[in-house]
Amino acid sequence: MVQPVLYPPTQLSPAAALALSQQAPSILRSSPSTVSSSPFSALFAGSEKPELWLQYENLILSCLRTGDEQAARQCLQRLVARFGEDNERVQALRGLVKEAEAKNNSDLEGVLKEYDQILSDNDTNIPIVKRRIALLRSMGRISDATSALVQLLEFSPTDAEAWSELSDTYLSQGLYPQAIYAMEEVLVLAPNAWNIHARLGELQYMAATAPGVTQGGYQKYMAEAIKRFSRSIELCDDYLRGYYGLKLVSKKLLSDGAKATKLPEDSEFSFPDTNTIERLNELATAKLAEIVRHSTAHDRGWRGYNEAEIAAAQELLSEDESASSAIKR
Amino acid sequence: MAQVPVQTIHRDPQLFYWILFPITIVMILTGVLRHYATVLMASAPKKLDRKTMREQRALLHGINVRGNYHVLSKPSFTARRDALITAYESGAYLKDPDARGQPPPNPMSDPSAMEGMMGMMKNQMAMIIPNTLIMSWVNAFFSGYVIMKLPFPLTVKFKSMLQAGVATKDMDPRWMSSISWYFLCIFGLQSVFNFLLGSDNAANQMAQQMTQMGPQAGQMFGPGIDPNKQFLAEAENLAVIEHHSVLDGVEQRLLEAVKV
Image 1 (cartoon, rainbow over the protein chains, first blue to last red):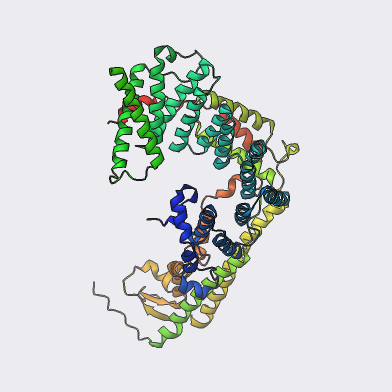
Image 2: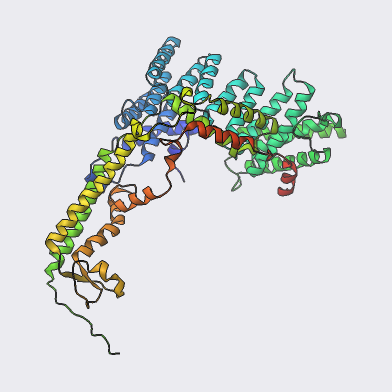
């Protein structure tokens, strides 16, 4: 069992982050603040482990989330003492702490100026570039953030994190084709990431159901969405988001009827026939019901699903039931 | 044939304390010293400037697209391929587009390449100097007599290895001279260093020689390689791909694989 302090902190629920930051004083007390590099102490105390510094980094993030800036400062001091002021990651973390402590917009502008200053000395400082983009985005300057992201990806096109952030930025502006393109780049870098496959399916579904989409575009997006969701389930058994999307898309296609499943000649993917869509819909419904049943009963081996996602799946299933009972009546 | 009588040689028990023990201690200490000397002498990895990073990552991007094209649908793959091939062939990603077509510069004149070679030289020196010193020390003080008997039988082939410095024809190969003990220490102390210094230590020269013989990972962007040629080769690789998608028929596969 991995300690919670070593988990990626962005995946912690708010409650877990709060619990972690409440443990911060005891963690800070029990871990060494520096590691001596002399050979004799290394013989007796054990050598330096990367986990120690990862732990401090995660603790900073959790403490900032829960407003414990004092503990965050303490962790940061230890990281600075170990890696020096000029380390790229440490610079980014210090910027993060400053952003969290900023009281108003002019403070944030000051932090942004510091980032620009650092970048004018060293324009390949990727952690700082990313912090600057995140700050621009949280200040509401979306178009600046987008252009900074595009610049970053121009000289570092193998950065999956930046591509997925770009996709999210485009999505927030409603630019679906651009968001899909960026998400496809993430897939090129991580071809077997089932969550990215499902996310791409979600983007296609959103693009298909967006207002103002043409009939041909609608069919193209829907045909790829159903395939993306299927692929994500193929890569990860019992993947809730995959089944949810599969059910959503297949239900929509079935309600459209047979007329919509004809595709223009030049398209890449053809729709599966109605029979297959029906079977996919049945499969997704059955699997969703199974996941919801096991998960709400807290069965062994079925834990770890996100509660909000389970609730959404339940809602989707109950919608389905009420619709079918209405038809019977 | 008559049984060969077991050879017995009366040795002073003090040999153990005054020869075996000192040689071992000295070998361990030099290993530790060499580790710290290498750590001190190591130069920080050089920072890439923006244009070099762009050149290298653009090439990696193309390799990724070539390797994972199956996750894309055909139109999006074709769009990427066309864009990449055009950019590669026009040299858009090159660090200095003016140097296209010219022969690559002599790697000896490139300062960054020289630095890498200096690092290698330093490591070699840190190995050779202490080894020469210790070997001459062992030779000067402890050569010419056997110091111990191995507890297991060996064939005659080992004679030259174990009895270096003792020129007797008929002696059982189980008898060992001090210079042989020194060689055994060179080869056998790796686990001791792992215990003392951690597994990525620089104490044992054998491990370093192994890595030097292995395939060199950094060779792709090494000095003396023309990036323009790499780009052109990659463009060709991309051009010959026959596209198929992992999404073809995925619904059928899913329905067959997953049973409720």
